[in-house]
Image 1 (cartoon, helix red, strand yellow):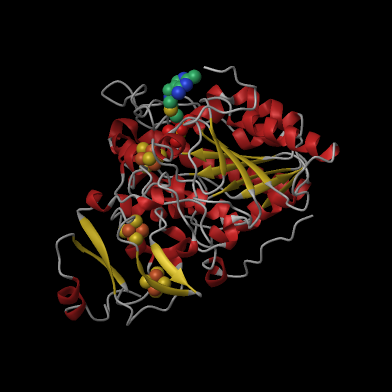
Image 2: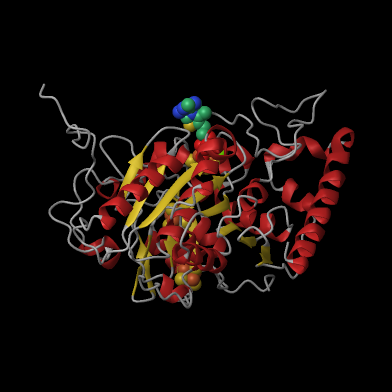
Length: 318
Length: 132
Ligand SMILES: Cc1ncc(C[n+]2csc(CCOP(=O)(O)OP(=O)(O)O)c2C)c(N)n1
Ligand code: SF4
Ligand code: SF4
Ligand code: SF4
Ligand SMILES: [Mg+2]
């Protein structure tokens, strides 16, 4: 077992030597890179990384540049999960045969994918990796839209969001389908560890990522990633949006251990109305017309019910 | 072209981050001590993306490191738990660091790209009583 990096407080965290580089081509204020930095800086171990096609992959590997100071596999839209699982399987095979050149090193295996890549196109591959219980971590950068190709809806896009393939207008309030409960589905694989994280709660994030790295077996992480371009807010407000997402409980922070032990890891002191979260984003602007206001109150009801559900699961250990 | 084995790569299919041999994990080497290769975006600049830029006033800074952790572009330079300044080659001018800075007045503020830093520092706003 490797030693866990000590990160007591933010000052200590800030002594980390980043392995993710600037002058990548992500939009100013993109949350993907804030999440990636928090994840990578949670460990000092070697990393074997992969990204599925999406903003993160495309913007951090524009020839002739790479923004990764670690082994990083650039692969298809659907299969960063299996690429990393393959690397992990190979590592184990070499280890068993005694052919590792530096057996004292304890690399961590991490795959990143967007919600389009994870909730939709790469879904069965992730499910397979989790079911086979590879010793790896899969992280979704959940911006609730296919951002890299111009904002098409995914099965993570919530009801009422205007996306390019579910536009709001005079006859539609935008997306009609509810967001897929990916964490619930992954938890139901009975994997050792599944959790939701948000970049504003860096300490909660680091704790969960370190817990994930210390876990033997498959780990699934869903990270909310406010997207200035597709959610339509000013780039300076990325962290404000992350705050609103966790404090309105639209993105509650919790973990599921072995499929049944659910722990809520953040209880906002002042719960923000869902309406405030929605009002901060251009993609929900139309919901404030009289005609569509019912979507907001229905949403609040869903959030309240979900919060109740999570608390009951937490108490019942199911 | 010679036939290649399954584990041999085409030249050009790998972008190397560093020059020379890497014995220890880069997590143990601060960015300033690394020998970046010409293929690392660290050697590139996005300074020309900016219309507005952050200016840092160390007089009010409490070294909380919020700007460091939330900067998407690894552009807040921290050393030994102290905020040192901004990496203007990699800063894209998003303004997040200013938003998350908790001091009053703020220790970071945004100005037009062409603004003169000395002038702005000399006329820095004083404590804003409106804010809690
Ligand atoms: C098999 C396949 N289909 C479609 C594409 C085109 N494509 C590239 S990125 C992308 C959207 C990615 O969306 P998401 O996974 O949510 O990541 P984001 O860009 O939002 O971070 C699409 C559709 C592709 N590269 N491969
Ligand atoms: S479109 Fe969104 S996810 Fe993609 S780089 Fe821009 S801010 Fe980031
Ligand atoms: S303006 Fe944005 S990119 Fe520049 S230092 Fe501040 S947070 Fe980083
Ligand atoms: S956020 Fe403000 S006070 Fe905190 S370290 Fe940065 S400049 Fe200093
Ligand atoms: Mg997406």
